Image (cartoon, rainbow, N blue to C red):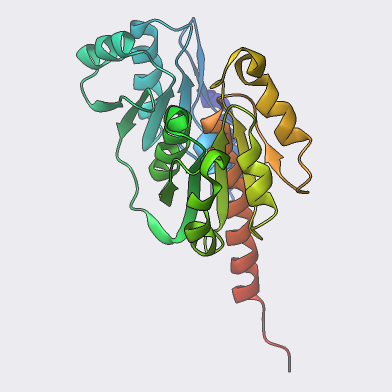
Length: 263
């Protein structure tokens, strides 16, 4: 932590040279912890309003533990994505204050906030093979205090399965669609729904799907206009996109409710 800068901000606040809001704005960009092998961001949640995340692949169990311990000193919730079960077991043996979600391959530490039912995001999968990526998105949303409506295994091979859920999907604030193979479900729902849609291509499929490249290109070239498309197997990225949408909605609603009435 940059203690000199922190002291300068607090001194200016105490002297009345800056407002509390200005001090908060400065503090949001202030600190990180230098662990030698990693620099952990202590104020990302304050800036973005979302739980801190550690990308699991490429890190050892002890490295994840050190990073998580550093972040937990500043954040209510810390999430580790795409963690193999062997690494997760090692991490929990050293830091037994979290839990491992097997399907999502995700570690979650800290105290999750209560979910807000009025802020609902739907997560839809084409097939059961897409569940790992879908659950990564769903659990990160839950850790962010968002209620998740799951609609799984409704791909175009049996397209009639999605129709009973269309009205319900249109009642949510955003829809995340997770699909491999040809990625066609995103286009289908893109033509049926009025809410924001975030499409996630997965690496599920036969050889010609090229580990997710085919559904990625299909989603990017969708005839249904206005889809947001994230990278292959990036359930976390889709969840953050949904949170940004919800954040803008909350800002709009707040500004409307605080606006003075005209004469």
